[in-house]
Image (cartoon, rainbow over all chains, first blue to last red):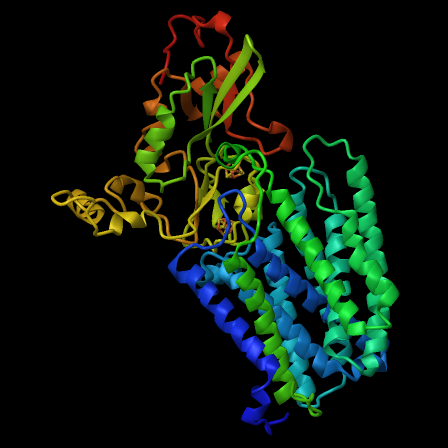
Amino acid sequence: MNFNVSRKDFLTPTWFLIAAGLVAGGAMGLYEMFLGHVFATNSALVWTLPLVTYIFLALMSTGVSLILAYGLIMKDEAITRHTRALLIMAIGMLLGGFTALATELGSLLNMVWILLSPNPSSPIWWMGTLYSIELVLLAVKLVLDLKGRHGVFDLPLAWGTLLIAAAAAITIGAVFGTVIGRPDYQGAFLSVITLVSALVSGAAAIVLLRPQSTLTDTAGRIFRQTALLFAGLLLVRVAYEAHSTVVGMLGWASIWMLVPFILALVLLQYAPRIFAFIGILGVLWVQYSFIITGQLVSLGQTAHWYGAVQSYQPNIPEALILVLGIAVAAALIKLGGQFLMDERPPAT
Amino acid sequence: MGYGMVIDQQLCVGCAACTIACKIENNTPVGFNWCDKITRTSGKFPAVRYEYISTMCNHCDNAPCVAACPTQAMYKDRQTGLTLHDTNKCIGCKACIVSCPYGVISFNWERPHQHWAQRDRLAEGCFSPREMLEESGGEGSPHGNPERGTTYPVVRPAGSVEKCTFCDHRLVKGLAPACVDACPSGARQFGDIDDPNSEVSKLVARHGGKGLREELGTRPRVIYIRDYKPQRRFEPARPAGENQGA
Ligand code: SF4
Ligand code: SF4
């Protein structure tokens, strides 16, 4: 642990950006939670950009966890040498996602009923439970690492995080599969998409946030492989939508979605951070598209009020919740880097 | 024992008395209709067809909203077959809204009826909304029905969903839901649809009938009988001698 942190370490452009995001996004989040409704939602279109933010950050955290667990199980030193940094990243991203989710949930104080009155038939219950367990496991691993206690628990903990993280990502696919399944059949496809998108965004985040480390090569390799798989899956979906005969189907995939991943595949080695960032934007685009599209189809009596198919554009308050989630994640990762890492990153 | 409703499309005149009665009985906020409608226009002039289908929670036996709710805030009441909601357990995740294939659940994005707290008067000498509320003694709005509060809050909290309860507060007193009593043409019948000898079951046995989107396997408890046909305008739903209407 490093307590030798001065005020100067916080007077940097990165910290100013983070602070601006926290203040603007935090104010908007508090307003939505306690004062009035400013999100562009209605009784038929209920999950919008704030929820997309949660899914985006939670899946990115899952990807980082999966890569770390893989490294620990396979004893890949390129990964295990960065265990603490990766744990901080995964925890920061997950808490950033939870923050965005909190602005979106109606009654946070009633969350206790998730424990007291659980419903195992509910995918959302599984999503909440699995991510809570994941957070606890990551925190336990971080504490053990800080105390320098490594030994018999390492492998079971790594397997535990691997299984829980994979199950959580698959469950997110189950939750949104039911929504996108309104106009069209999805089956288990979306669960595969969410799991692979977690790996793509997690690997890209490692390339972006841990530059010039031994990890860049390994994470870059994983990023290229998973981006190729992701592009292939998207292509299957695009082809399916092009040939579908389902009446009134709204497609969520577009051939243009492949571009960021193909660019990253080909050009990553020349500018890793830029193309990792482009890959992350590509994942956010795909996740946004499959979360929103299914809800655009109004059901039953709501069609009378909102039309058979709605249109949606995120508004500024919702965009600020995206900023808030990212700012919380960035602040926690920065704080972790400054206080918990032995070799501190240079002040930026 | 399990409650159910039969709606006779031949008798329904599309007057929306059910919708209004429900709003008054259940104190629903502006923009929320627990009892609502689907309308469909089809055909080409002069052979045009207009359909009015009165809708509400179908109290499905295999309710997707109940399966999706992470906290069991949305639940099936075993005694009555009703799908009910506990606002105390609701975390406002909206999984029920997304899962209900009928679009009958509404979400309170903010505190309902808050415009009734305003103190501004439109013109000198008239009541402000706040004064009207105080004068009437209603909870939340001057229309706040205290009897509604015996089984479900009169004003559902912000951050919680709400939907039709088949007027469970009236059922415990042996009354029919408000929409059934308000229907001027007797198109709505209510009773124990699990009992083959009940009036509602006999209507279904006689006319067939089906629920909305039954192909989804939700097993709705609201059954629609007799599509409207002008030529059977004067044909009764039941043979002569049997009680007609509600
Ligand atoms: S109609 Fe919708 S809200 Fe009512 S029981 Fe069925 S799924 Fe649930
Ligand atoms: S919004 Fe409330 S009732 Fe609906 S699923 Fe979530 S917790 Fe259950």
